Length: 383
Ligand SMILES: Nc1ncnc2c1ncn2[C@@H]1O[C@H](COP(=O)(O)OP(=O)(O)OP(=O)(O)O)[C@@H](O)[C@H]1O
Ligand SMILES: [Mg+2]
Image (cartoon, helix red, strand yellow):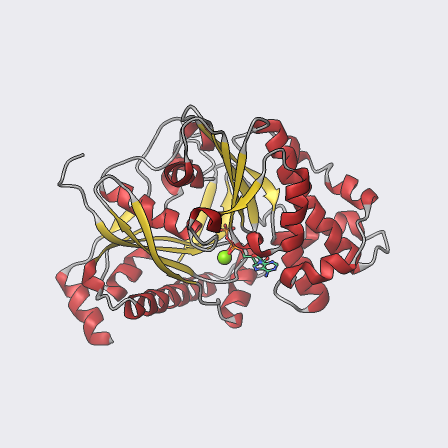
């Protein structure tokens, strides 16, 4: 490859549907796109900010002023996380080639007419504030060309984990679960399979005022409710063929209410059943779309849910390995993807896979917000 490519340190920033933390990772990417994960931090999203993301994501407020304020609060939070990562690695902003910032999704409706998606955490402002070129809005162009704008992970998962001669899958257990199918001949497929943590998180938050079911203690204290599980499995979205993506717009407590409001199932039994629902829908997708997979690699926060992993080990046709096994923390992969996609964007390379997203063409993803000398000096002065 040409030596004129942009290479060096890149930072990836990701806040997903779980609203747990800002995954902030530092990578070194060379001219061939080879990546080395150097460091990562996952600072928690403060409660007040989480509440305001929820009220905008769930449509409780549609006030434009609130949305604008949230946009700026997210930029401030992201800038703070980047600053912390830089200082603990003894790096100046000027050493970083670019940040790939996913932003916070507050709407994702690929099947609406027209399809739309919105991530807050303005890339232009972030670039100026921290003095680093920022690539953002990775999903827009794919959707313009008829794609779902998701999942974007399969190309990066292929980059990290493809091994000739072995059929591998990568399962990201975020709020939503998505799988990347890495065929031994180099072909790539991918799809969202439904919930990973999102329903379990929302249910325990409502019932127990906890952010998530740590180590699945609450779920383990309950009993699986087979009738409820069967009703949840009737959800028509599960039968749709790929390309497909989903989010909290579908899988939320209102949706769950349709199945439990006329019952008196114990809350802990519902939690146990929601865990099973995630495991079964993921395993069903593997059986349907990747039945000959030989290794399944898990990333995302669900890797720390021992009951979910235990059930996946029992239901999946392929043996399960956590990404640590391959030397990469499960917390770093999705954020690392946006650093790597930023590298591709700066080097004029496409970032989507039409067969995965349904777009009618490959396209370079994201808007590049370059920094000017003014922005660098004023951001330095502001600190
Ligand atoms: N010790 C644990 N026990 C049970 N669940 C855990 C544990 N640690 C993390 N989790 C789960 O992982 C979730 C966070 O996962 P992650 O950060 O991958 O999701 P996300 O931010 O929604 O990302 P994505 O964009 O991939 O959806 C938490 O909300 C929680 O449900
Ligand atoms: Mg997260």
